[in-house]
Length: 360
Image (tube, rainbow, N blue to C red; front, side, top):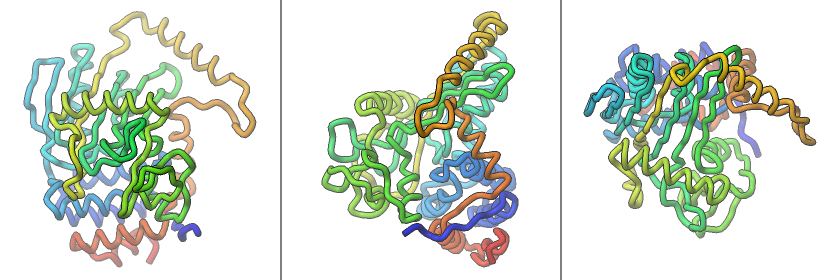
């Protein structure tokens, strides 16, 4: 049976989340960045990376694994190559600062590689690709996850690494950018939490139970005894996950997954980002025209049965954003209850959070 759903308008939700964020002792700027980033994830339809992350953030903070008001520090700077440390700060702040530095260098020099280590949860990686394309830059992101291993290797029966996201942002002159943002698992771990809280099954082929057998019960991604997510595309997704662990983790982050969980709630990310200005590579009129011609050709493909039309990466998120801005953001009652409990653990009044959201 599906859980009760609340529908909350954006501004009341923002006010409620800001009130909760005060429990971290965050500065006004940190509160703004974290709140806006999480709500944008909900708006794009990725509830797995939205406000439902706050209870885990609260646990990580109270355990000492998440540091409020932290900022990036520079470990290496050779002009077009930056190595940064996130000091276990909020990924919404650390990611923003790292991308701002990389964007400035790429615009000045034509390209920049940013190796970011020790950031707390960077949330929806597509947000960083969107930040780059807004400045006319192409970006590629390889990310690893240091937390409880939750994804099984292709051919394996238990979890050995994280969801290891990969993202690409490509600006297209005269139209919306292409934003490819994906977990290398079939689904993000947060989607098992969302399905579990809603009382809904997963699609077949996404999850293994605690014995390494296929299951559609999302509880094996959320509560003990835990199972493991599967990689998308069988061995191909596994290969990309491996690359993300090696580049985002071992190389950029200086820390890769190689053991069982320590039981902590913190989620640390390493991210290797490649940024470049496509205009430096040739005549923009030529490549822009070729991009548009290709995209027009692709989306003109006749739709299969059950499909409305062909969409390109980034389009579903923009459609969701427009719809939810108009209609409000759906939040299941269990997730909302967990958020209120997190507010109380952080010393904030849950009733006030509820009232600000328009629910009390």
